[in-house]
Structures are given as structure tokens and as C-alpha cells.
Image (cartoon, rainbow, N blue to C red; front, side):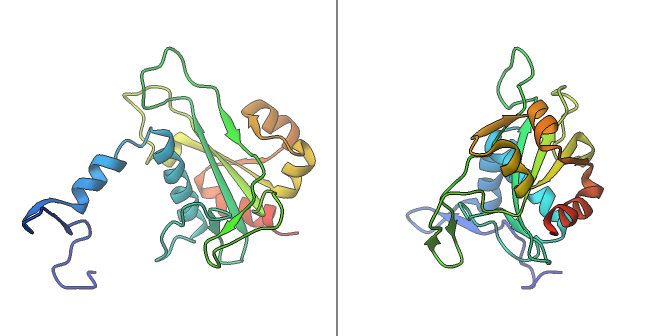
Length: 195
């Protein structure tokens, strides 16, 4: 249901120097955000997918550079990391799955303040792996082409200390996250985020 009769999201016009329409917001979205195999877009899509599973997207907008990516209705702070075998560029072989897990001096969008010390500011990490390797079959919007590994930040800290990145095999061996499909994310995050 439209909030304003006749309004269509993305129909906002880009105006030239004379005030004439030369494009729309939808045109911009198509141009800038339609390559879902791109690292940046895939990461944002992974955040969105996890947010959908956790039912915490709502009417809010993504806060760029916030201390964590999502917050559940139970108050669990979630950091989402994404990786894939298939990239948007031409590849000789599938990419190696690796995740950035470095500690950061967190910035809090809500208060525009920084944390006093660098750490992993979330309660739970969700590692998202896009599994498809056939470009013709790849559809990042199909959650069946993803799997998710969920771990508490406490478990991550205990297993890797101040390590800055981790591969898939060491993540599984050392951190021992729970591996789930899209439908299992909500329960896994709640379990990992509840002391």
C-alpha cells in the first residue's frame, strides 16, 4: 500500500540544470546496485538477508559504518560477514572463502561517538557464504545458494584472539560455529546471543 497515492519508490526524478527530468532514482539503483556478485553489494545483500531472517529490517535504513550491522528485537547486536566463490569479475578459479574479523574502534551512529577501545562490538557474528560457482546459475537472491555460520563473539574472541581475518576451514575448526540455512538463522542467532 502506497503512503502517498500514486507514489512509486524509485520514481523520484534526477533533474538537469534547467529542472528537466533526465533520470530516476530507480535508474540510479539499477546502475549502481544491480551487480549482486560485486563484493560490496553482496555484503550489503547478506546483511539484508540476515535482517530478513531475524525480522529486524523493519522501516529502518542501513547505517553505514555503524558499530554493528543489525540489532534483533531482543537487543542482540549482530555483525554480518560475507564471502563467495564466485565474483563479479572474470576468474580463473573460484575464490577462497575468507572473512574480515579484525577488531575496530567502533563508531555508534545513534550517538555519533566512538568506543574507548578496539574490539568486536557485536554479540554475534553471522558468516554468510554464497556457494554457487556457475555464473549461469548464480542468483544471490535465492537463499538456497547460501549457507550461514553463526558464532558468539565470545567464542570468536576465545578462538582467534586479535586475529584480523579467517578462512572457512579454520573458522569451522577453531570457532565451531553453528551452520544453518536461511530458515535456521533466527534460532541460531538467538541461541548464540543469549548468555
